[in-house]
Length: 52
View (tube, rainbow, N blue to C red):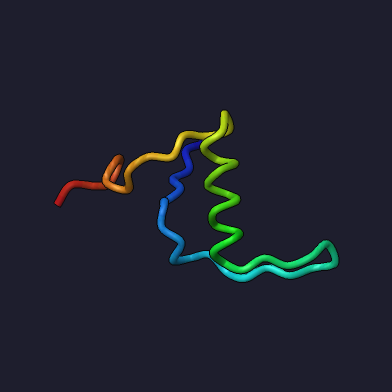
């Protein structure tokens, strides 16, 4: 399975539940830190993009 994670935050939403809440910006930044730390490598959005 391949998954592409873009480094922009256009699809990120505010999140709130019993554990607390995060703004879309806070959530995006936290996930990028997680993905980039031995979990997955963050790349340039042009990588793997179909050529025109």
